[in-house]
Length: 296
Image (cartoon, rainbow, N blue to C red; front, side, top):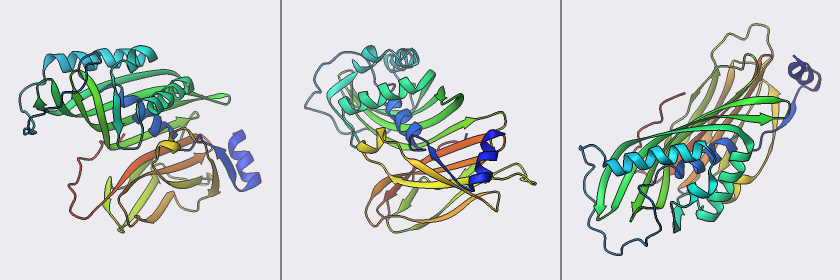
């Protein structure tokens, strides 16, 4: 009740949300750590055979076992063990390398009292001896400490990764959605946002509160940010304003150059707060459309 009273008095409020999408960024970073295949630090072989079509056969036992081990290590926050699976030349499509990714992961684990990772292989294909390309889905759940309250975190991240000689060499995030909630009855929010749009294309971003508002005050804000390696650890104050309708309804305009963005919604009611962040990929016209992340 204190939160809503303060908001009514001030009409708006700034929330130091560690950038609303920060959870998604760090979650995505953590997901990288779960997507390798095997152990060791052998160099990547120079000769790679042409990429084959995705295999319909079950994934190799070594990959499945590796994911299980990595899920367990990350869930224990075993930093040193987890980082042993990276190539020194690891590359991330968001501009991260093994060092900056490690910094983001350590910060994320410090923010969370507990984390639980679960990864599955959606598809895989061989690229040569001891070399694979995988598409995976990682679900991460955690509890964050924010001021005097806990925040429940749930994230789903789909990635494409490459592994060579039992070393994780690259990652591209295909889709992600992260949700943070706090309070006895946080708003139940449904987000409508495409995962991918063409350059210069307009798009709708709706964050709809499912429960009727009645006489309850609803405050919120939408945040749109480019994804860069520097953004992963930055914090931002978000200004909340009273909303006359049951959510946020925005029209965005994609940049004229291919890029990646985080689109976030912050919504506060008397019963609590919900933050939802989703990745939007901006591509050239004609690029393949990715399989959407299953809504949480």
